[in-house]
Every structure is written in structure tokens, then in C-alpha cells.
View 1: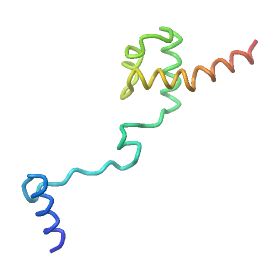
View 2: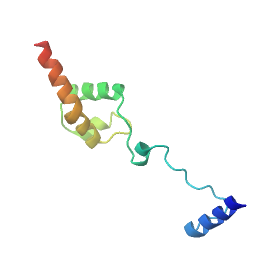
View 3: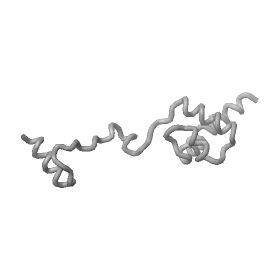
View 4: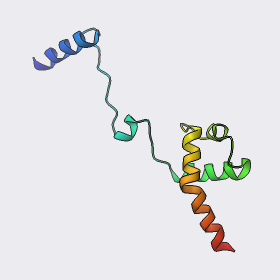
Length: 93
């Protein structure tokens, strides 16, 4: 059986016992790199938190966003959300 031979070969290379399940590959390129797309809900929450606390202390801000780091929050705000809100504010006045 070819798959059994593959399992034995894998076990020899990794030091794992034969029959132990191999680790599953990530289902997408984003998951492989630990990335996920920002949702509109996360954007709204990030804007609300920054409005309340100001654009500083990004790790503290990220603690309110599950699965996000301070750097991710800062980059999302500075590269995308800040410019969108500035444009919206200009249109209001």
C-alpha cells in the first residue's frame, strides 16, 4: 500500500510513530502567514476605540480586538481608516 509506505517514510524522517496523524496544512495562504482579513465590524470597533482613547498605546487598543496585535491595529488605522475618516470629515464641513 503506497500510503502506508508514505506514512512509514514520514515517521522515519520526523521521528514520529507510524500511524500518528500528520499535521494538517493551513487551508489558505492567509492562514499560513497568520493573517486574516479585517472585517467591517473590526474596522468600526477600531475606529470607536481610537476615537475614545486616541491613536496611541496600540497594544492596549489591540487587546480589545481578538486575534489582532498592536502593530496590526496601528497599520490598519494609519494606512486605511485614518485617511477614510479624514476624507469623510472634510465632506461634512
